[in-house]
Image (cartoon, rainbow, N blue to C red):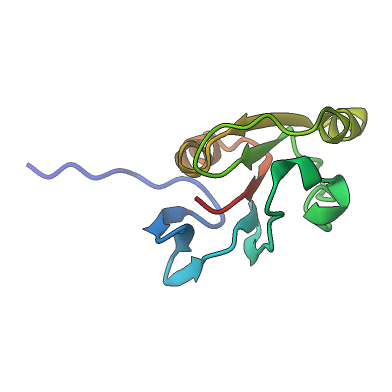
Length: 125
């Protein structure tokens, strides 16, 4: 008997890790990535989470429909993002779920299988 995991998620799937980066299909994103249901973009993530601002996310938050929340991968360990960053997103009706980047990569696949309208910003490991 063969068991198969049925993929129902639409859009990109993080399939693994490569060094400090992430693998999506055959591409490796070594310096971080921005991901949404429609695609993935290389991201020059800030070296320190304290430097994170909404502007550094580009147009990631401007999707229609608006994302429920940002899945924020904070690197090798969980680090709380700046309160001003969280408030700015909450003022737009977007929550912030912070976790280490490995956990965020795994959570991305699970949440997209549930067809949740989310976006992600993952800092390198």
